[in-house]
Amino acid sequence: YLIMGASQSSAPASSASLNQAPPTSSTPAPLPSECPVKLPASAKKSSPLRKLCPHIGDDDRGSGDGGEGSSDPNSGQSSASSPSSQSVYNVYSQKIDPTNQMPVHANNLPSPSQSAPLSQQRVKSTIPKGGTDSGTWTYPSPQMFWNSINRKGKVGDTEEQDVEAVVAIHNAMNERTWKKVVQWERVISGKEDTAPKLLKFIGRPTDLSPKARLRTWLGYPLPFDRHDWTITRSDGSTARYVIDYYYDESKASDSAATLGTDPSNFNSILVDVRPAIDDPMDLMYRVIDMPLEVATGGTDFEYLPMMPTAGLKSQAPEARKTWESILKSKTMSDSGGDLPSKPTFTPDEINKIIKEKGLVQDSCSSMRKALDSCPTEMDCAKASLALTMCVAEVACPLQRNALAAALREDGAEEEGKVDVALKNLHECVGIWDEKVKKAEEQI
Image 1 (cartoon, one colour):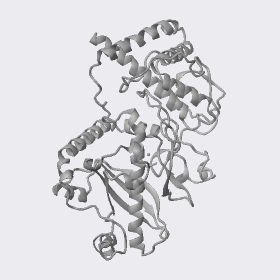
Image 2 (cartoon, rainbow, N blue to C red):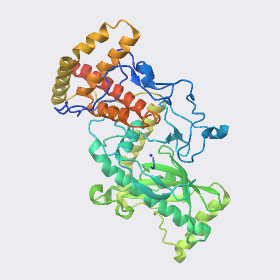
Image 3 (cartoon, rainbow, N blue to C red):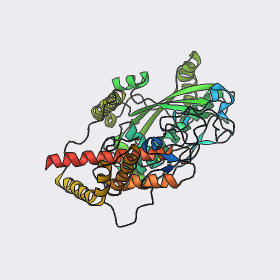
Image 4 (cartoon, rainbow, N blue to C red):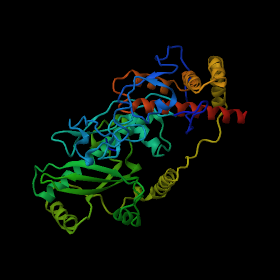
């Protein structure tokens, strides 16, 4: 993207991280180890933290999950002023931004299978944001980007340590795209000082545009991504742009870490930007206006050549494999299936997992006994939370510390951050539990 309840004794599982470090001698961040947990009055009724254990300090007379009556921090106006302005929340009680269908407060927490911390620093773009007087879009932090590609099943061979470089490329790619959009708008409006704004965007990596299909017939590799951007013009009208992104490996001679953030440095990313043909005028802009301006020197816009270089042609088979992998990931995601996980562990990985199991058994035996013998639902909820926190000290220190930080942060519950941190912690413990079972099967 551009800017981008637990049972008594088990937790949901997901893909596992194989490089999780054992606990250090440093003292873990303070974290409530048992119920009840104090929640603010504004906490949503659907909060997983409510389902996990009893709570205090809440008032169920407030607004429900639909968000009616809540305030929009950006506008200062109540969202209950009209039915169309009511806020929308996802299942984690996070308010959704209708321009990109992402949480207003984007997920900047470690993912369940993550083993190393990533930067949570976000960078402002130069792309004006539609619906604001002077605001610009904000790029995702490396942590948010990692969460996004994990959610979409697009991690591939990307490692956690690569993410900051990938984000730098991602940001530069979008800056270059916007520059080309502005060049089109100057030709279309006939004004050098035209000031379009990006209203919304959508990624469509599995939808091949007609022009991209034509390029593949001419020998181009398949694009690795496609975006549709909707802009607003100064007269209030909107227009849609289609963008195809290609990768030219022959031009990737330098690492992203040494290239900075100047879009002109990332020559390995090829961008094809043009207005979508949503009406006859759009066709005229594409076949008459822009070609004429380019031919007469009226613009510095540069077309992506229709005929590929020899280097691009040689990359077509590999691009086809990448495309098929993206389609497979989308199909499995749509069907609710899990992506394939690593079937076996190396001997070193097995030794590490078994060592962690021993630490958990030594540290958490009393919590396990308490869970096995809990007499009431409340006692079982307390024991379940205590056992999860104990296991997390060994198996999921990153996720545990993220939950501790969220519990200390003002407003985190209203943003849904506590719920997401708690869900991630339980998934991480579930992942670790599955790793132990698989490692023991291999011994």
